[in-house]
Length: 315
Image 1 (cartoon, helix red, strand yellow):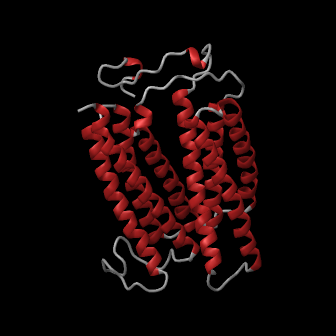
Image 2 (image 1 turned 120 degrees about the vertical axis):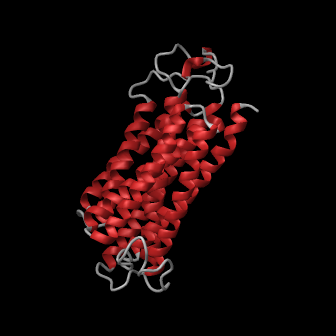
Image 3 (image 1 turned 90 degrees about the horizontal axis):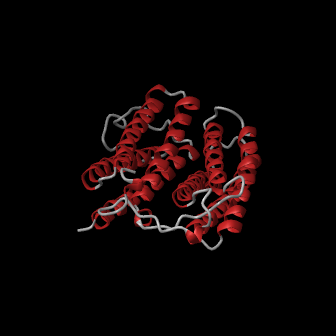
């Protein structure tokens, strides 16, 4: 059995883990949007029980905990599968890093419940969630059949390079998500987040235009550039609608259904935008190398598989 065949199942399991993590992040956003973070006063049990009464905000908080437990088990199994099936050291490292991150995330969640201080603990919890999700996305891409195929190296002699632009965009989106988490959890006001939105918008437009202009015929790059811009446009619309709802009713006794839906979707699409930008960035590093004479004159990259070139062995 070939190396690719042995790891295809691990890749599929990694994708399932990523999708389940998206559900977990959505559940976490629902907790915050419904102001249900303090519905359960103890941790790891809930009111001293494994299954508390499912009423009020407890439903959202307990569902979040259940999904967190499921994701933790999936990540543990994924780390074990990767260690057993993969020969590449980086894949194994990413698997164990993801396991450490999910453990740290659980501890942060417990600190948020037991110690409080949401402006600090909840914001840190939200930031670590993005780092954890990004690690899983990167691992899934690294395990994918696409990564292990032979690729013709592409030339990008323009300045700044598409790779650099994608990297700057990913960093800006991550910072923007930090600002958004701080705003949602009361660490600071909305102005830093709105300023960040302008910076991200400029970078996403610049990056998407550069990908389309320089590599419009390269499906692997064009696709993720389209996803990035689509998520960005959706995020802008959701952000405007969410802020409009807040301005209409700044101090509601109970969050409206419209606000809950918009704010939860805003958090979710932000995470997906980060994932799209991260995949685009990693893909650029993988198949674009500046300084080569011409993309069409380069030989296909031989992968570090059985009988392959040691060019990228151990990566």
